[in-house]
Image (cartoon, rainbow, N blue to C red; front, side):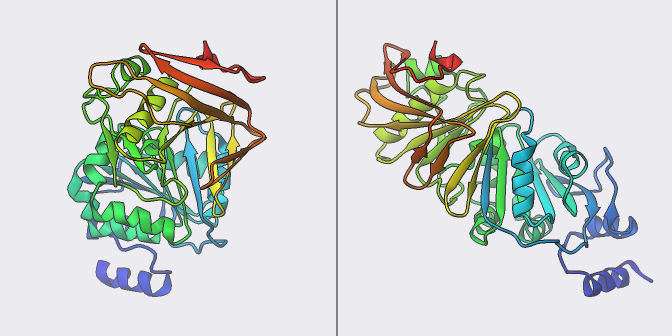
Length: 360
């Protein structure tokens, strides 16, 4: 039987889940559809590498449900990933990234388990974001996860492309989407794009909120409940409260009246269900999510001068808290503080029962 005859038979008797390019389909078919993990890609397309593990033709065991999983980077909090897997109906996960290889898909399938298959597309060129094989896999995915790396690649490769629209559509269809580190950075209505190749520090951002490295990107993804949010990752470990306050000040000064910041600690994840209720999974390091909400406009956002910004509410979201969106109500906050940026420094006051390390 020819390859095309095998393909036709496979599509007829299967769920017609996947429509890859000929190279990808051939690799899947020749391996019997159940694809084993390998350090080498299953196939390569125009501007991407493709990996897969599991039974790509298996029926999804359960129904899908909406959900957003915001992971702060570092070690995965497996309970949060199990939450996402359950919302994907224990079906088929697609991992998107612009560096690395099959590490995330293998962790999904082997270390966590409970899914039928996982596939990975590693992007190296913007043209892959219009590839029919990539778009077909995204359309068929039960859940999508965006890995870490360099978020500037995601902006360059995906913004204003069919892939970006496909991610929005995936969420509108009531399917879960997650991201960690750089993958978290692009989930908000605005993204710190790191477009200059660097990584903005709190020190520089507070000293000059209009520094050329403050590359904020809008109109990328358009996800429910994050319409006013800019996200940040590796939060307490990398002392990023100052830069998130500066990001929010910059947006507010640019006329985004409702802009707020949401930072996630390394090893933690905030999972938001279809009703807009967010629950924190703190991970092994007992991390938090940090909600940054101004009570008034910034007093000074001027090129080359320190940020002046007072009465910025900083609310900690812990394992016992609940964040209710879009109203930004936090039930049982882990801590509550007020921040003031002045003279290039950030000062916190009104100590809560828990004093995070970055309050020093």
